Image 1 (tube, rainbow, N blue to C red):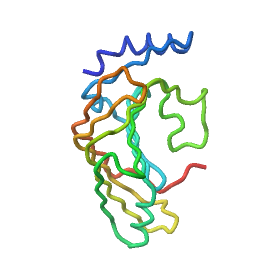
Image 2 (image 1 turned 135 degrees about the horizontal axis):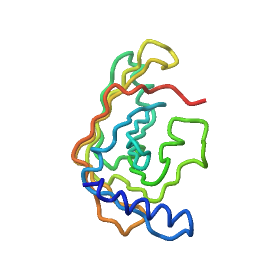
Image 3 (image 1 turned 30 degrees about the vertical axis):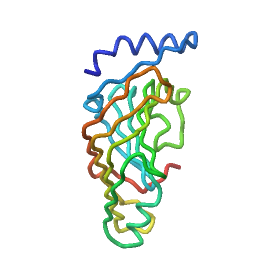
Length: 176
């Protein structure tokens, strides 16, 4: 399970911050069980981060909320990953969510030491435009299934996310 890597992660992060050593911790299947803080913003970004702010999954795609707003109804869009215009990544490090849906970067910002990108799987996005013209009451859902990730830095095994669902996340608002 993912938690078993916690002591190694702290050692690796300390080594990186002290001397720039190349030790980047690897995730394991089931990492999504620790992602407890969820949210979203913009048109459209979803995120899920662990309590320690050391692992974050983020999904983004442009234009889905605007399309739902223009149609004046909820819109569902399915993606076969990877897909053009869709970003689905997992970042590992310290304070990984510090710049997510935020226009103020604090404490030197995120310290990402390893990134994984989606290379297969499916994503379903539901965009609900709300009543306001400026999307302030918009919401959305994200369902990810059978997603395989590979490390962009190499040296780590691919990981699989069986299923992750983010429901009724507030989207549409823009930081600033």
